[in-house]
Length: 315
Image (cartoon, rainbow, N blue to C red):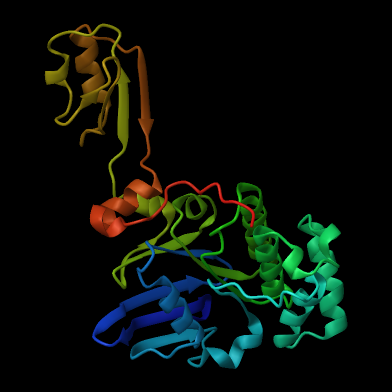
C-alpha cells in the first residue's frame, strides 16, 4: 500500500518500561478512511501503542507517522483522541464541555457551542445540553467526551477502549457515531478487547498480544485462519456413522459437528447417502472472530478478551 494512502503507519515500534518491552516491534498500516481496530486482552500493549502513535510518548525504537508526519503533534489539530482514562470538568455544562474540547484543537468557541448542540441532539442527548457533567450518568458523560473528540471534525479519530463501561443502548449509539465519522471521510483507529464490536464495524484490524502484533488483515482474513465447521444431522443414525465422519467429530446425541474436510463436503455427503444415513439437517458455519483470536494468540494469551459486549451499567 502506498504511503500516501495511509493515515497512520508504524514500523518496528518498541517501547520499554524498565526491562519490559510493552510494545515489541509492532508494525501497523492504517488506510485513510478506514475503521481499524487494535484488538487484544488488557495488558497487551494497546494503549501504549496508541499513545506512541500519537506522539504522547516517544518510542525507544522504530518509526511512526501520522498523515506522513514523523512528529504526530505537528498535525494534532487533525486528530481527535478519546483516552482510556475519561476526564471532564464535573462543574462544566455538557455543551460547554464539548465546545471546550474543540477549542483545544483550534475550533472557535461559538462554532463549538453550536456544533455541540447539534451533535447532542443527533445523539439523543438534546435534553442534557445544559446539564452539568456531574449530573450525567457514566454512559452519557462518556458520549459527551466522545462528541468533544469529534466536534472539530478531525481527519483521524483515535479511541482507546471506547465501549468499556457503556450499556448496550449507548454502545449502539457509539457504533453509529463511529460509522457516521467514517462516512464523513475520517479514519477511525480504536482499541478494544470486545470482539463483537470489531467483528461488526472494522474494515481492517490488528491483533496484539504480549506487546507484539500477531495478525493484521480483515475480519474475514482472521476467520480464514480456522476451518469452517459443519453441523450434520443424519436422517438415520447407525453404528457405522461415526467411522464415516472426519476425525474429531462430536455429537450431542442427534447432530454431529466436525471441521470441513479438506476435499470439501460433497464427497462425504455422497458416502453418507450411499450408506443409508441420509441428511435430515446440514449447516456450514464460519468461525467467529473470537475463535480466530484464540487460535492466533493461544488460549493463555487470549486472557480476558470478551466475545460479546458486556451489559454495562449506568453510574
